[in-house]
Length: 84
Image (cartoon, rainbow, N blue to C red; front, side, top):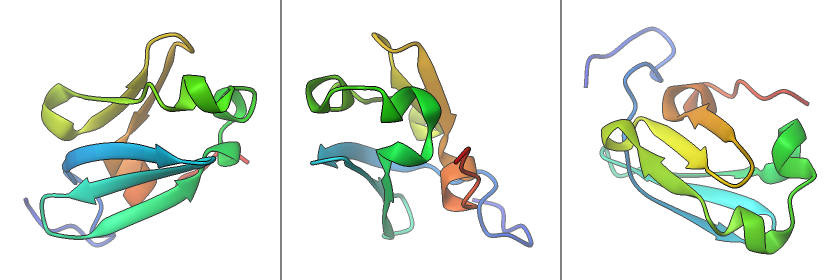
């Protein structure tokens, strides 16, 4: 992973999981990050069951909720770029 000033570009996740309304990522560098789903408009409206269906895509660089048609970049989450 190339280092950038914000330490977030090219961040890659090994896994994603949801507990309650918190989304967690385990990154390849060993960090575990969590963020409230309610920080994103489409995720805020989702049920907990819908949130549970998060998948990693693009070799761990993106999160996808197919049913919600929502995509987030892992680097954006690491940098703290939230909608709300």
